[in-house]
Length: 287
Picture 1 (cartoon, rainbow, N blue to C red):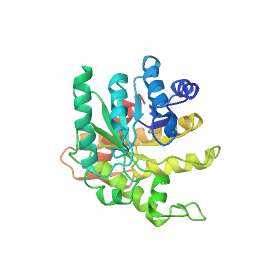
Picture 2 (picture 1 turned 120 degrees about the horizontal axis):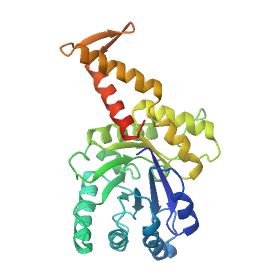
Picture 3 (picture 1 turned 135 degrees about the vertical axis):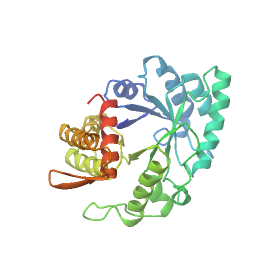
């Protein structure tokens, strides 16, 4: 799942538009993009969208300590999305708590236990940065982990997230790296943060390509126009697939080898593992 598109759950027009995109996951947002006075209306809209929603639809609930989670989860149980997005997660304990709540809601709604997966946004509080190694084994529902700079900048009292040359400042580069490592350690897909400079397609493309090269498997987005750029960047290219196939073929021809020479370069078992993962991802995407 490469592109994760947020849409305010209180805007029926935006929901319909989001469902027409090629986003891998459309996230109906009950949290930051919805004003407090419109939370109940947003829940109603999210539920009403059930019949026209694509298979991979998610609902972002409010934070576990917001006082709104019971109402949000009741909506989730009724709407039965593929995923719930957990904001302001603070480690594996947060995921485990949400998983337990979902199990009760699924049982009451007549859904199979585990039917609803979890994507956690894991860098939105100061304390969350100390918990990024705790997600492994938190719940089998956990399928993806994303990071974000906006809430974190507020939590840290930061006046900027990037340097003048657009590089992330130290704290935010650290959050990004720890999310990448924490997600892979938890066997969850690491997702890069949203790109907020709407209209800067060249900047989005460059950021997506850098994230994909670093090991991220997808990116969150805030506008439908960003989806095609994200999908392209996180889809293995024909050249990459060809190179991976040649590495796999070389080791198939020499199964006892630990290291081989291919096109004048050394390739070893870690290269083989990377090639196999890339090919599996390409097959899943129909490449």
